[in-house]
Image 1 (cartoon, helix red, strand yellow):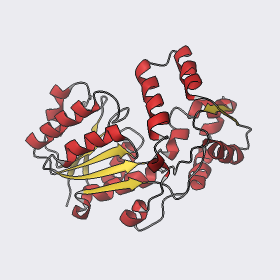
Image 2 (cartoon, one colour; image 1 turned 60 degrees about the vertical axis):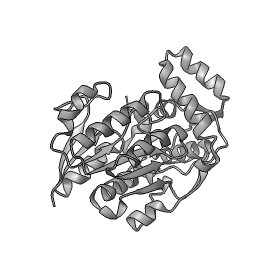
Image 3 (cartoon, one colour; image 1 turned 30 degrees about the vertical axis):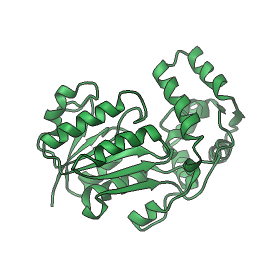
Image 4 (cartoon, helix red, strand yellow; image 1 turned 45 degrees about the horizontal axis):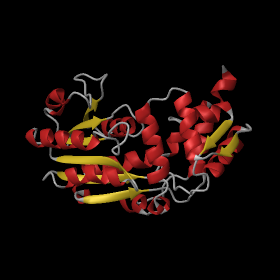
Length: 278
């Protein structure tokens, strides 16, 4: 049955893939973004009812992260408006090991609307579509928490799980924790990218205060620096963050994409060599 599905963050890392996959199998998708029509802006709740009108289900991604101040209030308001708009199902993208994000999850869980919570580990795509990209292109990567092992997860897998959760009632009331099948340190990640691109990319461990000081000197906004400090200390420092789960296999009936496969696919695009190509 064709359904009307709102994808909030429909131009983002997971949202655009969720939207494309839903359209491909015949569903009507409304993109929730500031550039869409009608537009969706997290800072303009007075416009949300128009975006929600006529929708059956919603996929929610909050930018920049559910842990930031103001996220809880935004999710509370969105949930309230979703109930008024008779939304039948909400799927919330959350962060694995983020205690603040779990407060937002509770709002959705207790909304009396069918839901699925998708807690994801750090994305593979953080190295090709986010704040790690520029240092990789420059050939010099300095990051804190150098010895922490992370089971990175691919946005292809996340989006497949989200589509399945949106369309299948058996996922109602479930909390899935999505990870890759092996753990890597930042040094191991950079080594794999270096080998795949044939480029020398240096990795240097750095203390978190020194890392944030560099960002301050570069004029990075204070709220983004706060988020980086939170992610590197509270999230990466949380022992549960390194745990590997089999939830992707449980939902999709297959293993998650390995980090090496992501690296090979991404290296072919030339994104990590873009400075050399200019």
